[in-house]
Amino acid sequence: MVTTTGLCVLFLLNFGGTADHTPLSLQYWVVEGAVEGRETPAFDAGAQAVRDALEDLRFDTWHTVRRQTVRLAAGTDTRVPMKDRYTLILRYVDRDDDNRARVAVAVELAPKDPEEKPQKILQTTLLLSREKARIGGLRTQTGELVLVFAAQ
Image: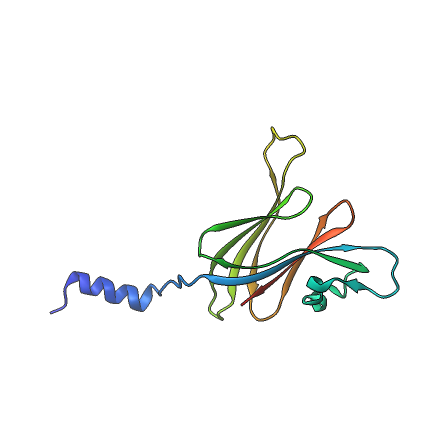
């Protein structure tokens, strides 16, 4: 005889799916691109690892601001200070049916006046497989920040 509790457990296992609570290992680079008038693009040691994700951009000089591997727990924000008042916010959401990691990415810009609140200037969701993903357009005093992501 099957109890009501047993039926609920069977239903959840068959139709509810099982949540994957395994943290995501995410590697990211924050690199700054600048135009310095070089004939041959220059990449520092950290930017060499993501050169393939940067080469088609208009910059000729690349400096790594931050390079890190983090373990993201599902549903938890990870905040990373970058450069020039920017803060990166990462949240591992889940995996899709093709096993791609879904990561919510946001960038906040701190105000010049400490009395004001930071502004969210970018918000997107990335589906990461084996390829790298990049986000650009964050202007700095000397160039532009480009974020490159790779799921491990």
